[in-house]
Length: 266
Image (tube, rainbow, N blue to C red; front, top):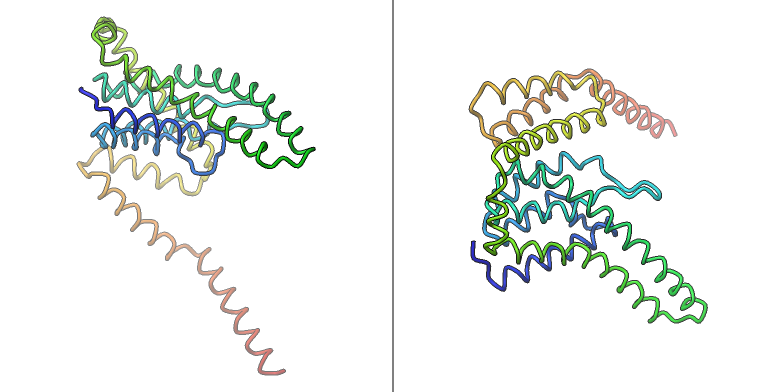
């Protein structure tokens, strides 16, 4: 796949946004469903980007930074795995399986960058003592762009080298038994990710709908749009027939009637 300079610049920009989003946790550009989709749009294969992003999103949904514990880097894994699949012509299962060690490597880089950020934090403290708001702003921008380059530079290196003959020959020289193993591992990782999400939800009274959806998806030829419509209709019917919601509405209605009656007596 021949890459243009515009595509390289756009991928670099998306990578910077993903790196910044991974520390700000505000705009969610680092989430796989966003980062992979944007890379797919840039590379002209949005379908593959959405598929990889959706799969990685289910795997990494429970990954989060808790205190001093740094989670694996979803931003770096999302962008590099999408590049490997679309530009490197690798299978989606292989890209998903490779994303796990990439995320672990990105975690190490993230810890190093956060360690460097301590220096900038102390510098910002010194600026605050002298009321130097401009210095504080510059320090914040520098530390933020460090995390942007943490993702964009490795992604750009992979993007540039993936098209060379040496890298392509290296990828093509991987034995079939290893590629099949990666595909199998990718499928297992996805299943484990789904199981983790279901375990986090822990909504036992809705599990029958999960099994019903699994059966419909497994033994029918419905696409995602039709399955979504079926799920929405079932959800609406469930809410309309569930006595819990009727009791809630009746309670609110009785409260309004009582309040109106009290106002009339006053």
